[in-house]
Amino acid sequence: MYRRILVPIDLTDVELAKPAIATAVMMAKESNGSIRLINVLPMTPVMLAEYVPPDFEAQQRASAEEAIAIVAKETGLEPGRVSTVVRQGTIDREILDEAKSTAADLIVMSSHRTGMRTYFLGSNAGHVVRYASCSVLVVRQQSG
Image (cartoon, rainbow, N blue to C red):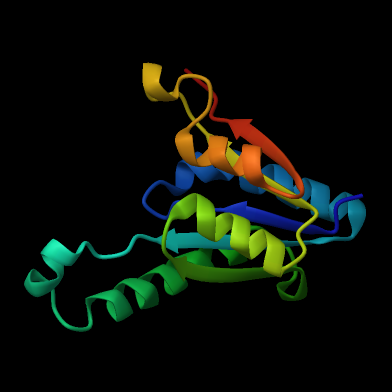
């Protein structure tokens, strides 16, 4: 049913993404599909630019690409069925752009309850759900 599944990953909290990854892997196996893991790096604020090394963003990207490659290997899918991308910008916008550019059938993402402001759905997940042109499955982190 879903052959191209996009899974956003926050590399600062990979544990949060594990239920979404497991769900995406299961769905990809059932449909002989593939998954694409995406990590979005934030832009360096202009006011901090003079305080970071000139190659700061390149270092961040290299670290993220290395970390997401490890996550991809841990999915257990054969290499031809899992791919990765690291983008930079606004999280929800980059996820939506990646979904569109890869013609994703489904976005599977994690969300958690962090407080009243994001009680129903995290702000990034909420924006993706509202504006995605494909189906979105939000996997809640198990409380406990």
